[in-house]
Image (tube, rainbow over all chains, first blue to last red; front, top):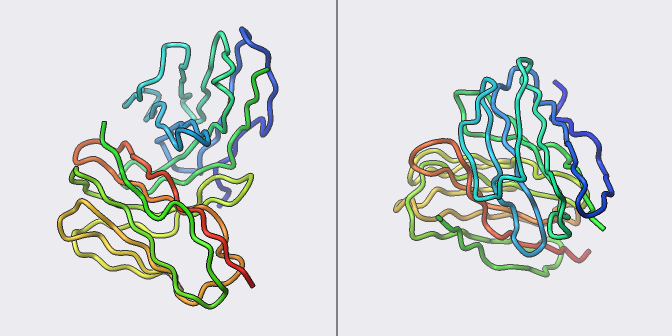
Length: 112
Length: 111
């Protein structure tokens, strides 16, 4: 069974731009969560989607948003990028009835 | 918010040695998970624990869900060079499915 895939793997943007990251969960997994990983803050929860609905949200500004499609694929968008948004963005999927999340390889975003 | 205190932050050991790391919190959790992350990759799930007192093994790895539900530990026996990486604990709150992560333990194994 294929794992979680994320595209693109690497991205360089400039301040003020916006970016969209994509995540395809493991087949059959309907829950997708997004995390931001930085050396200083560790893994921080952004939001979780289940059946196209946001089920949970972390403490990030409104510039961070996401959505989920009917095939469970998810996207997250960051608008008006700031230097501090440089991070590894990880997507994780799980079946609806378990708590074991499986991560993708991440998208490394660099904001210059 | 809830926090997990993971220790040690880093470990430098010789191949063949046993390793122990733990996570503690002042909050109660219903699920503990342990992950390993290698450079350039996402975290990989190693062990999941669902009951207080539960002891679970995965090869040379053993993890336990603390009786108080506020802590968990991970042991690695007879370490090998490919054990190198960052190990994270993660815990699920008593309601919902959101995970909180520890700060990670950076493990270095010298051959």
